Length: 417
Image 1 (tube, one colour):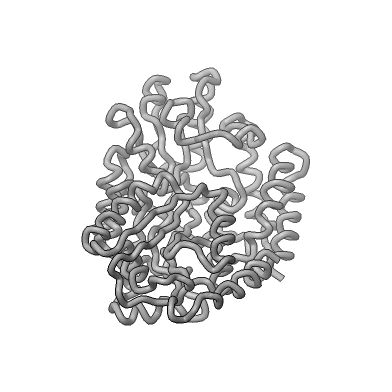
Image 2 (cartoon, helix red, strand yellow; image 1 turned 45 degrees about the horizontal axis):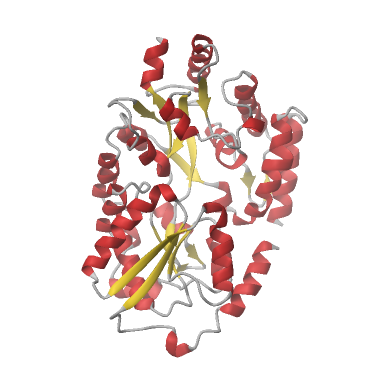
């Protein structure tokens, strides 16, 4: 229903702008708008935009950073009125907007500029190709790490985890932190939700949440993954899920009230910029389960509004922001892990996060798979029901892992019809 409603609203908007205003070959005195959502990445985006403006003095770009929980509602309202930003971030909801007719196809621009998809992570490039047409140019690539606060381990006299750690190692170390801190330090924060946490465990075991067009949570891997995650809560190694809504795990890791925390790549700069002694933070890949440590990946892209009145200028902005130079500037300013294949982009990200020991090795060890809601966008509509009605009841002990798995499959099957 969400997709249908959005499509109906946006298809009407996509044709209201007069043809003579849809493009502009003259860019003198052009004002562009760029809409993003993550405040942690704002400095990186702004750094790249300012460099663009220096090389394009006739184009001024205004960056609007909308709160994540308001981004799509603001975007829908603007696009539905035939307006909206010239350029925008998009993620797993991109197909809705492409179907709605409000995203400009980029194939003609790509051909004109001689751009090659080989310049980007192929998984992320493919996420924004619909029906053989490219609608987005990749910005970044999600990676998942665990960072630990070395000062906490030193103060407690505990050996920190090693780079080749396992889930059992995490349990053992977590119990040591819990015992020696006498409850003053929470051992761990890990993404306990269905889409990022539970499904990643399943993937490590060789399972998957969706097979074809059916949910497959009710499987040995799905039931085991649910049980492993709830075990962390029941052991007191993570904060009770019901009490976690306002927990800022990065701030808790910085302050030392959490010893280890799962941190996605787009938040690593928050640790790098923290006012702490050198050597405080060390970064590892996720703990191995059955010899694997799978993590879900997605990546943002830059997309152009089909109703933009300055398409040539918007094209120039996207081309610059997603270039190798643009990727380096993003990284230097604190944005996420670039999707560019150029080694210089990765090195810029590692250098910008130099205070994080072990980061380069942790990134090289990633075992990514496409996020379930990215590979199957129809599932997005069912996520609130999974996370609230089902997962909250599961963590509260109201339903078993088997019951939770069966209920999640029912939601997935309905969404994928």
